[in-house]
Length: 486
Image 1 (spheres, rainbow, N blue to C red):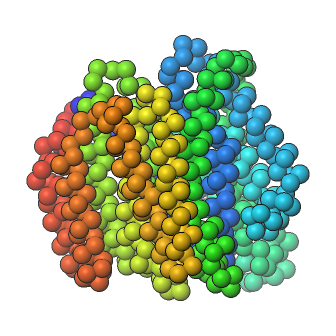
Image 2: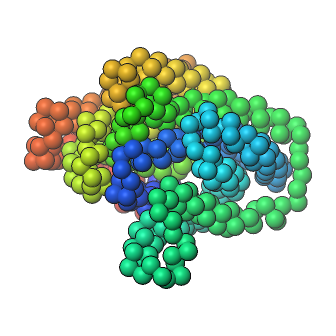
Image 3: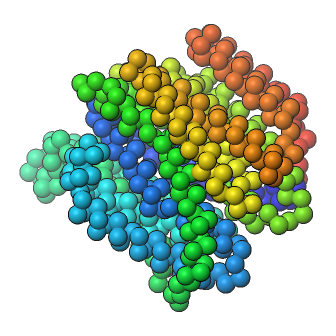
């Protein structure tokens, strides 16, 4: 139980590092939907979808490989320097090639070439901090990790406020002021990328200490082992990113050109309301990943892994039901422009999909600690194929609703496949009855509240109270041991 308590403490701090910055980022949603029309928000959603894909390509599994070998190798400094040299070299190569091929990239992605320049430098800066952030997590320094992450998004958020609200208002009121030279009309998308670029650059400055203090040694043998370990993670990452963001890209190709960006804008804005589940799942994953590796050789780690998954399902079920019940209140806070609300029907589907993804990450411990990362690739590829097939087949008829269903089917299938193969290669004693009970009740109450009772807040709140009562009835003693026992 002490290990579990330590995990929750670290997860709480990592949660702050993840949730607070993303909550600041989440506040950009009402800003963007207030400043940009649905088509404009759709355009930036497409660009950020491509960002996600290239982020995975530039990381190519090195973060996970770093964790594995940092805890496995006797000489940890070689793991650090080999990783830094590798990421630094590939990032430099990317910048050179991307600048040379910028016109070709613009034509393939259907993104204006002026935004390609911003994207190249932002992606490069973000790639260079992958290993430093992984080093902080591996050395259990969550506070520094949290401070830098929060600083990054705070700068980004502040600059967005300045460029999109304060600067235009200032220039409108005092057109002859010195700030007029900084302002350009209809420059909103560029301002968004400039904000991101500055924030990424400052973040790298804070992380340079790891680069400059290392006695650099490149271990070719270690590099080969890390690449062999990381390549399946790269494939899994690409497939996973297809599941996560490729629907927006496919919508841009498969919907009629005159409505595509507007439909994507509505879908992307309402999709963001699943952020609460995504934040919880991401914070939990960041907290447990080092725990999985560092305790893989301890006595009976499977029992601890099973307990962790039980707790994730309990808290995730509460979040699922809470977001669905209060979806209409959340849209008033974060998506204030009613022109976006047409896509609200996808919110329960996307929140449930994010929950399934979170469960999958918990279940994926078996292939990470047994060095069978190729199974992660296989499972993610299966989900990606399902995503692409469903989107291609049904977007022309059902639009973004098909994309929402495809996301749920992909993550649910990945969850089930991971559980199936995990039982074979690394059995973990999950309490299936408990997991299915909480998951089933949460889904049942969510469906009833949102679709049957038409989002009635009173009835939905009653469902949520009943569910909380069930959790208290069955988990009271265990949760007290974790959070209250000293």
